[in-house]
Image (cartoon, rainbow, N blue to C red; front, side, top):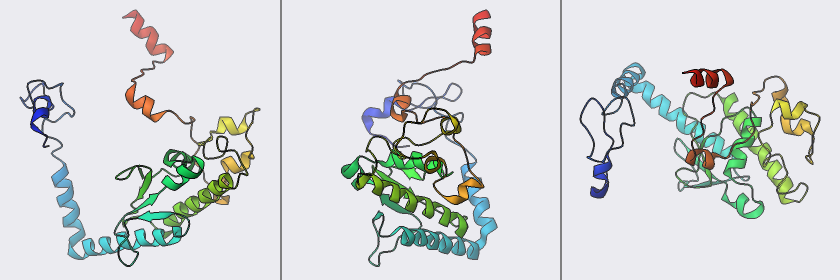
Length: 240
């Protein structure tokens, strides 16, 4: 890791091996110089794939990314395309126009993807307010289509906000994700049906991941450490 001169005194230290600067706050990993397994893992992957295997993996990764980009074309803007409108092994969906127009941002879409039983792609990197999709060579066409179907349906949900059919501050995106407890509870004060919240696509009725908690304040959580102990653990700590 390279840093500017003024940060050198704060480089991470280690309790066993002397490393870092004189003002080091302690280690950031168990090993003083990083993980020794990184290079062997890469070497084994290359050895097992072979020349043709690596070529084929590259071809499929690029093909998968461009297939998804083509499916989402017209509904989402994709940044940094080539002269022919193609991308490499990944592509970046620009979500900033939705925030500017109706207040729907990347976090809202990432949380809504949970309702579709999907984990959001890389968010706000390398460009803030975007999603970076990198399908790699390992995903099947069915899985690529599952993500694209979800994103296209989410675009329809954003359009409902744009058209004023639902409030900007009370819609399936702003309230996502929806837990089973919320869907089955007596109280429901949203202007959209429970079915739309829980089953936006038909295939989710057969196979769905249910989130156990609602949305949390990610930024607050990153800046404020909160330790919650169970009742049993709390009593044990007090007895000690």
